[in-house]
Image (cartoon, rainbow, N blue to C red; front, side):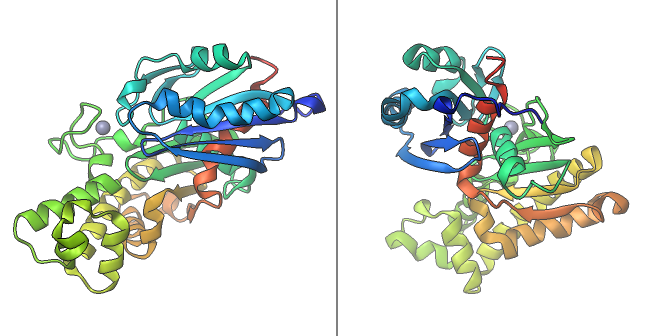
Length: 320
Ligand SMILES: [Zn+2]
């Protein structure tokens, strides 16, 4: 791995930004991957305004010390051009040349990368992936993303593993395909399943939450009442986990990784959702490959994406 250890000490920081469907976060990060200052705002309907809102204060205060800005975005990215080719969950960014927008504003080097890819790079650099040479990071939240490290390097591919087909004539996905993993195993899918079952008359404690407005439930609510013994909640978490396990088995059989590192909000439901995924993956993957893979949680959590984005700036700054 090549990093810019010869960076001038006056440029010892990079800004890492993570543009997600729910939040936009920015942080000042040093070359060791340490987060020095962090700002978070809701994404809302105008991600550009929010992006500037989180980045302006950091850049304004530390501009003399910043060697570049790394942007992580949920979606398919043309890394060379810095263009968001398709962002199903943040549609206003689709077609936007983010590299040019940010570079023009700050007159600084900019890299744009898929958020799960930057999360994988963050985990490789200072997280749960430090001791693995080949691994896949899966981000399990509103959607499902993937980032792949092979021979200690971030694989420069889309790695949109959430959009692998697991059901030939399945549910419609925001990407335009049918039967995508994300449509069965994401937080959106699990919550949607629970709501749909309640609408059809199934009994559940969830029905009484939020004063009876069960449309507001989230996966944390589902996990909590599952632990209280609610059968519907257990069913939807196990079902989502089973679908995730199919995706994990496909990844194990294709890439034979040393590890699958899991991150995102759904990790809070580990002992139902993830256990179900592990059980399914163990049944479906080649035994020889399954036995040598570790399935572990992220150690950086939400910071993985911004740390990885900043680290990519340090790595690539000599080329930009
Ligand atoms: Zn899809």
